[in-house]
Image (tube, rainbow, N blue to C red; front, side):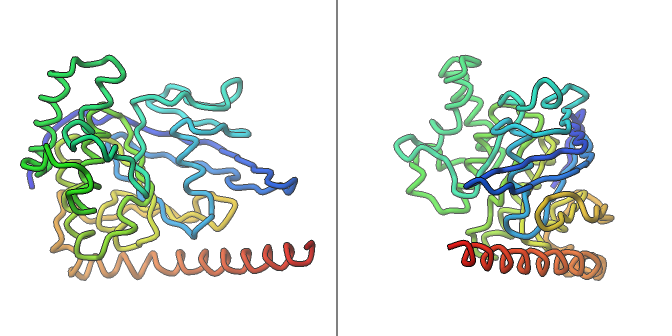
Length: 286
């Protein structure tokens, strides 16, 4: 894999972010006092227990919901904060979800080309040509005219990421995109994502429960606390990029797994105890 020199963009600065939900009249603090810096062009891996608030933070960056307080800046421009609690959704921040969102009635090429056409940024012929180029770069040549149901789950994930990149985002927001894949397919997809990243150098905010995935892909791994969500520890992964899968058998990689696993396990136990406590409270109120 060869790194392409491009000017990085997409620096995120999160300061004292707070998000409170109120389901059924009970106050649930999902994110509280969360501050984090993500450099332009950095792969930042977000790891934490289920339900800790990771996706809540991603949704605030994407503009899907408001913060109660705090600020988020993108390249020094305010996304949300005082007077503007909810960021405006836009093509500069594109989300790839766990469950996928390809249109099953459109070919893969039509799916990739869809965004710029519907936004009026490109004519159909121009968008289709750019889509072909991006798909070829991502190793997707030959499946342009297939439908999503005719390709494997791993290839569908790659099509979704290429579709996101068609909009030239500054930040790619990935919410456990490989969670449902088997380990062998995951390993292929990890290298495919890195290959795309080395070409585009887009900032990546990637949520995962897989610690080895986080260390293999990330420049930085952020261990989040159990709810409410805030960084507990931030690790800079001192393994040079570009990377390929040979690094996972190295002593340095295994050392990083050992260093980070204790922090993750501690927060998982706290999340379990919190879940047990809340379940008991619900039973008592019933």
